[in-house]
Amino acid sequence: MASFYVENFGCRATQADGAAIERQFQQYGLARADAPAHAEIVVLNSCTVTAAADQDARAAIRRIHRENPGCQIVVTGCYAQRAPEEVASIPGVASVIGNSHKHQLAEIIVASRAASRVATNSGFVPLVSLTLATRSEIFVSDIFAHTELLAAPVFDAANQRTRPNLKVQDGCDNRCSFCVIPSVRGQSRSLPLHQVLREVCSLVSSGYREVVISGINLGRWGRDLRPTGNWERTTDNCSSELRTPAQPLTFEDLVRAILSETSLEKLRISSVEPMDWSDELIRLMAGSSRIAKHAHVPLQSGSDRVLRAMHRKYRPWHYRTKVEKIRLAMPSAAIGADVMVGFPGESDSDFEATRLLIEELPFTYLHVFTYSPRPGTPAATLGNQVPVPVARERNRILRDLAAEKKRAFMRTMVGKTVEAISLNVFDGKSTEALTDNYLKLRLPGHHEPNRWLQAQVERIADGALIATL
Image 1: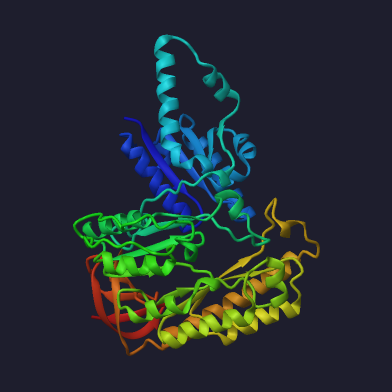
Image 2 (image 1 turned 45 degrees about the vertical axis):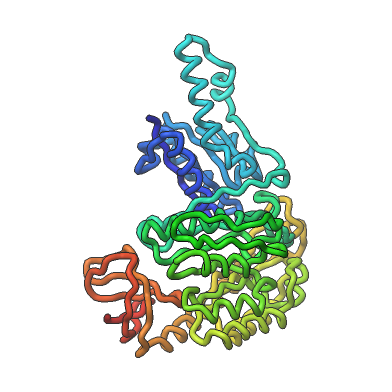
């Protein structure tokens, strides 16, 4: 039995793809190794959202080749899709399998190893073996011609027994000028409703209480699906009621279906673009105790001029309205955003518009990124690049602002009773948990993971709420 190891880089969608690849290998009877150094096949599931992500992948390839020179290194993911020849030229890489062929990865690798064994046993050295000695096999084609979507729940390595993440959408039909993701992940594709329900019900049957649904452009789920008749019954945990949608499905339909057709105790929604935070979605979230009060709304910039140059489909005043509606409907919700600094041509006044908007809105956390030119994107050809020291300073200013807003939000929780799910993290003194509104909480003593806890918040220490049962 051959052994494999999958190492993931980047976003939750990439991690979910990695989980699906592991499922593929296991279906072929391969065993998961505990580390790259102990595996015969090592899959590097790459990211390419920044130049640093590419560099991380190259460094990992060199490290694994040095530590385990006999293993078969397979590089897949977004970097493999964007620059297959570049990846193939790195010493140690046996195969490059882009996102276009990721759904066949295990099949390709298992077939190639079987062919190699047959050839070796017959005493014939096949041409492919001679080829592999000098260059890698490459399996990459036009990503826009593919409609496949890998689906398997992914588990945080530190919390295998809590909060699985399920990718229900892939690809993106937006064309933001700075973003390479559409060209490496293709058009927006949705996991069919009955498959989503099957996966959620399976997780519920396994004892999971909270599930996170995610995607590259999650709010676009369903736009590519045509009404096909009945929702299928998936497991005994799902309702046997059959319904026939009269109109194309929307993301709101997906949320309602998970609530009505499964017994999932808590649904957490990951990032949704501002355009897709409809009044109906906000009402759904605010009106159900089974949906975590957590809204992630990517911002990127608070400057109208910069948003236009980014080809973003909203203006600062649209964004402000969405966030204010979310806060009005859910006064204690976590509200987060992605923000980019250093976009080409971003002036001091553009940055100040972003800083001021963030200061005025009720954010509880931010993910702040510095712009990185991506080959093939329109923004990469723009002049007036922001000097690196200036971009770094702007990044620092926003991170400091975000930290203060998070502290202020946490202070509002002191003295309150909150619900949290216990995580699989115990430092010998306290157990870590996560509140409904996305705050880290610590409770004295050891508590079993994957349990709902009612806790009284007493104080704040080291970036966490300190509480007692």
